[in-house]
Length: 137
Ligand SMILES: [Cu+2]
Image (cartoon, rainbow, N blue to C red; front, side, top):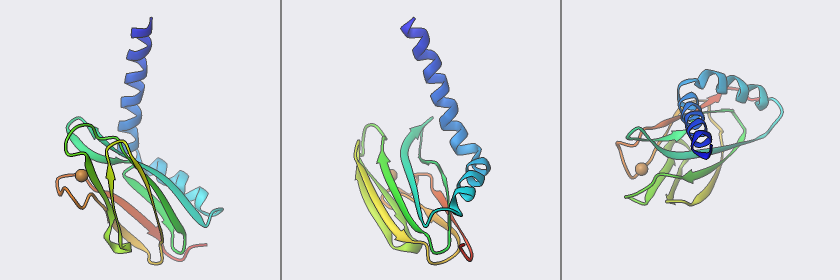
């Protein structure tokens, strides 16, 4: 019974993880709709190991120009190395998060465009994207 539950849960979690990576446009639309109401855009980005690749979930973040962007970064990558970076060079964001830890970064998205979100420690780590819409509210 527990085994069956775990199997279903594991399948669901896998689909969720996959969905977060591949169905970005839906997440984008949701985030965009919420953007009208909030000047502080809050995200939780989880660093995961998925089928051999290290990546950020969600992998697309959307904000309006002028928003304060607050991102909670969680490192859930098991094993070595225990540290992973979280950097958005365009906004001078650079942090190192130890395995199992959480850190929060905050900045003002004062310019519009498409920006790289990456692990500054490991070039092979898959990047994410930050989209900042021009003009704001
Ligand atoms: Cu890394």
